[in-house]
Image (cartoon, rainbow, N blue to C red; front, side):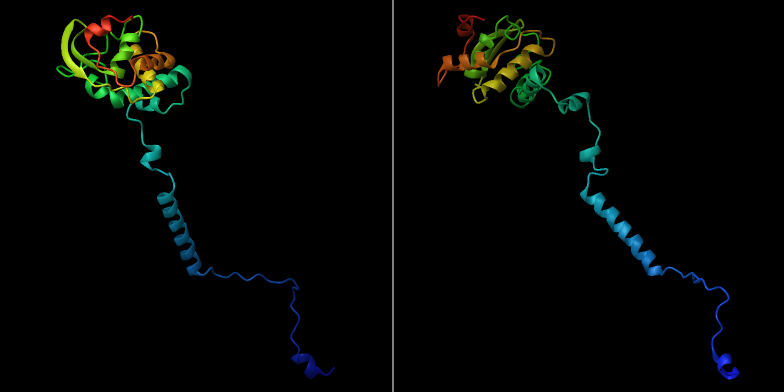
Amino acid sequence: MSADIKSSLPKPPSDPRPEAVRTTLPIWIIVLTLMLLFLGGLYFDNHSGWFQTQVYGPYASVDQLELYQPKSGAAAELARGKVVYEQVCGLCHGADGLGKPGQAPPLAGSEWVMAKGYNRLAHIPLAGLSGNISVAGKDWNMGMAAMGAALPDADLAAVLTYIRTSWGNGASPVPMEDVTKVRAGLGARPQPMSHDMLMTMPE
């Protein structure tokens, strides 16, 4: 090979290993990544439960916390009775069972509620009440509609149980079967109860 040809050939590198060349990351990739992270966080904030008051809002009271605790048996029946009472009875008799002057007598400490039996008490919400009646040493002249007539027997039994065991009342619970018997005995169109009618019945 002539000297001219040898001089025109490239010289082999002294180190045959490949050489890594450092390059700069394009700025648009960085911007795009940051935008995707921001949009992803915004999406999860709007479509998940993160920091939403419906999920993480504090309970306003111990009663509210207790309402969401799972219950079974007698505790479940009592909790159901409280809910129905507040929806149907509490407006007149008060959430505390103390009644309202000129509107409804108290249930807390009432001799009708605290009676040994619950037969008379069960007749009142199923048939209604009319005329004079004495409650806790005070005379009431009032009319009460049959507020429990539209309730299922299980709900009415739960309400009566709640009334008989709340606000310091320590009476026995009311079985659903006994409410069913009272309803059947009244018939389809019962007349409102009066004090005298109730007193002729067994407790």
